[in-house]
Amino acid sequence: MAIYEFEGRTPKIDESAFVAEDASIVGDVSIGARCFIGPGAKIKGDYGTIIIGDDTSIQENCVLHARPGERTIIGDNVTVGHGAIIHGGTLEDFCIIGMGAIVSDYAVIGKWAVVAEGCVVRSKQEIPPENIAVGIPAKLKGQIDQDYKDQWMKFKNIYSELASKRYPEGLKRIG
Image (cartoon, rainbow, N blue to C red; front, side):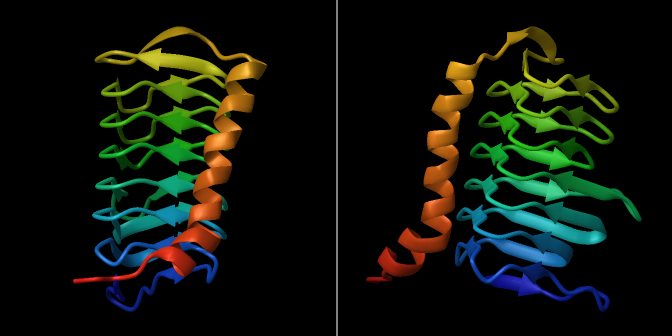
């Protein structure tokens, strides 16, 4: 793992979290219990602070950053899909950020909201709880239901298990 102190600010990573060997964690970053930080993820708390709650999945090649003196806050049970960029936004519990999506400064993604693949959530834009946002720029498309939540909880639980058990026990370098 590439974990760096920056100007006296040291990342705090729960011992049950999994951070891939080629992920990069810099400075004022807090990562909660059973989080999965995928290969190639870049989480930089150099200017600002990054807070990641419990049971959250930051998948491969994601970039998380914050403005100087400000925070990027990611709640519990959040899924941030492959290659997404989160810069200075707030992601409330259980929300889902699709692959390649961008969440800009001061944006707020509500509890259980979904930001579709490739979507761009503009600065200061809010996606209400349990809504689905699509497009560039993001527009509300509909709402999720209980079946959707049940399906996604299965996926969310898989990443928590990968982080706390399967990767630590099953990942073996062979080359």
